[in-house]
Length: 155
Image 1 (tube, helix red, strand yellow):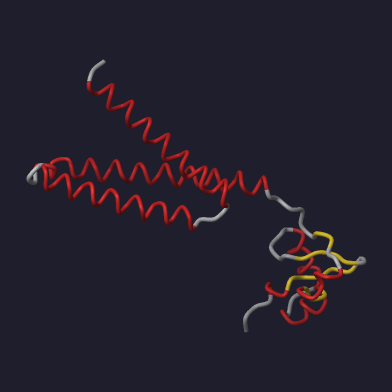
Image 2 (cartoon, helix red, strand yellow):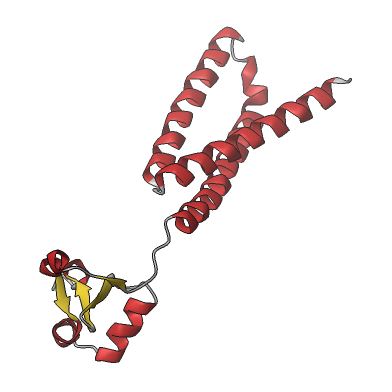
C-alpha cells in the first residue's frame, strides 16, 4: 500500500469519526450547545498541536499549515453534518403530537387560547393553527384549548 492510500484511509476514518461524534452528541442531548462546546475544545486541541508542531519542526510546519487548516475545516464540517442528522434522530425519538392533553395541575402554566389570542392581537384560528403546527406549545383540557404562558410576546 502506498503512502497516499494510507493517508486516504486516515482521512476517511477521521471524517467518519467526526460524523459519529456530531451524530451521537445531538442524538443523545438534542441540543446544539454541546456540539459548540465540542468544536471549541477541538479548536483548542488543534491550536495547541499546531503550535507544538511549529516548535518541534522549527517553523517547517508552515508548509503544511494550510493543509492542516483545511483538514480541520473538513473535520468541523463532518461534525456539523453529523449533528444535523443527530438532531433529526433526537426529534424523531422525542416527538410529541401537537396539542397534548393537559391535566388540571398543568393549567396554571397555560392561558386559555381565546385570552392568549386577544393579548397577542391575533385571530383565535391562527393561534389554534400555530398549536397544531407545534409553533406554540399548547393543548386541550375538557375540550378547551390552552397555550403555554411562555409563548407570550415580551412586550
